[in-house]
Amino acid sequence: MRFQNSLFFSLIIGFLFSTACSSPEKETATLLIHGGPIYTVDAAQAMVEAVATKDNKILFAGSLAEAEVYKSDQTQIIDLEGKTMTPGLIEGHGHFMGLGYNELNLDLINTTSYQEIIDAVAEKVKTTEPGEWITGRGWHQSKWAGLPEDAVNGFQTHYKLSEVSPDNPVYLSHASGHAGFANAKAMEIAGIQLLPKDGIDKFEVEGGEVMRDAIGRPTGIFNERAQSLIWKHIPATTPEKDTQAFELAVVACHRNGITGFHDAGIGRETIALYDNMKAADKLKIRMYAMITGWDKELLDEWYKKGPSIDTDHLFTVRSIKLNCDGALGSRGAWLLEEYTDRPGHFGHETLPMEFVKETALNGLQNGFQVCAHAIGDRANQEILDRYEAAFTTLPDLSVDHRFRIEHAQHLHPDDIPRFAGLGVIPAMQAVHMSSDRPWAIDRLGEKRIKEGAYMWQDLLKSGIPIVNGTDVPVEPLNPIASFYASVSRKTLKGTPEGGYEPAQKMTREQALRSYTLDAAYGAFEENIKGSITAGKLADFTIYDQDLMKVPEDQILSTMIAMTIFDGEVVYTKNP
Picture (cartoon, helix red, strand yellow):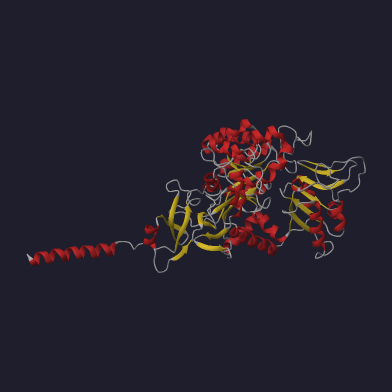
């Protein structure tokens, strides 16, 4: 009996030993994060105590006790010490190289008067060789305290700017990018007559305008496609300067908690630059790029080879950007009814609508998403019509198209439910409402503002997600400002009490989702990022306070404390 028991125990021990040897080793985490509120944007578990990652993937999200099972001597521990973590934020519509070049050129985004622009250029002239171009971006006349006395059509004139820069051509882009301001030297180089010869010459350009005063003199304002008259004379950038701007943009993204970026319209040279940056291991941001629709030859090349979906999830090209109207600030947005503050003017159709339909059909046939810029109600309506026509023509290819309209700021009420009905995603930058709403009512009037401008909640309730962002460098990259605008409907100064059209506010959960999971959905990437879910990429944003719970008037004081990209800490705020 004693022998049988001994034999039995030997067999059990042998079985257990063999089972242990044949079992796979327990996975160990490279990173374990805990110690503060963690919002997952995952419907299965909205909040967790801890997250474990292995290399660049999320290994586990749940309780701290369960997460510690994955800990080893090699695991890096991050104690949040009460700070808050969310999925890595995604800039849903921006201009990456514009962000970088804003760091290199004159940044006029915070100017509050024409005089500040003059002073900035005068200072730049001191360190610039005669004949060398001075460029910058960011001014917005509607955000100034007042306009100069000699303003024309609501814009300043070039005379004072030209006085401080007689020997340097100057071109300063409007914050929106849809207009620009040139001095006399720049116009001279472009061959623009400074004095009228045959009466008043408006110098109309298809899809744009060179503004002139009552006696035909150019004011220096070039609206929409008329900007090309100046652009073609500005010297091309150098590869060294492009690389510098790129690297500055990456740093700016990390500093703002941004781990993904939808680059809204890039050409051949920028695509090559991003390829080179990836090869050099400098692409420390997940880039989702839209090919510019201005270059038809480039589009044809991509139609032939098809989308490039990066298995490393760093640089994907599978969408096309079309610029179909202008901006509200420059009165270039294409409207169904005339501008309230410029009778007889309806804005500009900057791209033929037939080309929109053609591109929509080509996109469906070749696997490309189409993303069309539209701010005015007519532009939105016309694009929805062209999309719908393409979907009707090719129904089998339209099952999961995820076509987008970029901005969708001003809609006719009848078109609001069409987004969900057609499955067209509105990519809307909430901070535009905060910046534009105080003066947008002058452009559109109260009725159009209340019934169709910045209609976030109506769109969300209709069943379509919203992709959020900033349109940087039109606005600063700061996602906290856009989050605040989303939930408050106020200016960044906290006005008005209760917010503009408060029924259209997002909830905080909706606002966070618009910057994470819904932004990922807008790029066909919701299965790899956008929520803190096991198996997804280890991209996280950490804040110094709980932006989901702090009082509304404290949201703007929230700072990015840390950014984790691809499982590695890439930014930590200095104490």
